[in-house]
Amino acid sequence: MKKIDDYRKLLGANKSSSLKELKTIYRNLMKDCHPDKFQNDDQGQEEAEHKSKEIIEAYHFIVSISPETWMSYKEEYTTTISSVLIADIEYKGQTLRIDYADGNSYEYFDVPKSIYIKFINADSQNRYARRTICNSYVYRKVTSNLVPA
Image (cartoon, rainbow, N blue to C red; front, side, top):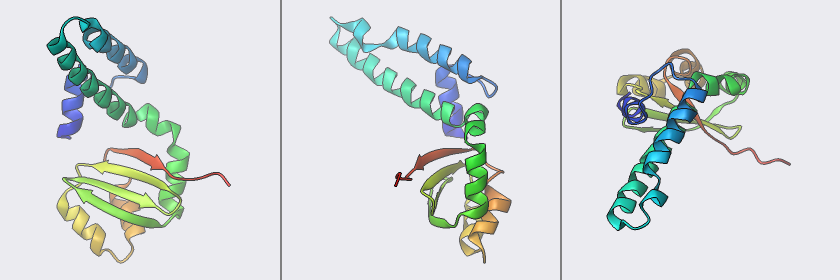
């Protein structure tokens, strides 16, 4: 949760901030540190560019894990985790990425290594993921690779 906490701290947001509040916070921060404000100050412009990139990254990340965003794809998520086979798994620094055969990918945050090891060794990774991981950890949709026919 360190990444999540750091991003919230950078934005000055909290767990219960709505998407509308996040958007307002984001716009106000961007007004203050937009690189165009520093036209005649190269160092200031460079710092503002760096700061604005951090703010943009934090904003998009926090929006992607907000409950309102989850609700927008809840039905698709439920269908994917309950009926689609896992195609690939990646684990880096307590972030577990699960790619499904339908092209959807989700990242789960703060997954302990012990849970990951049990997941890898499970008789049915799909069942283990559904029961232990999918609705127990903060997650976000990373991508959907479905190509229209």
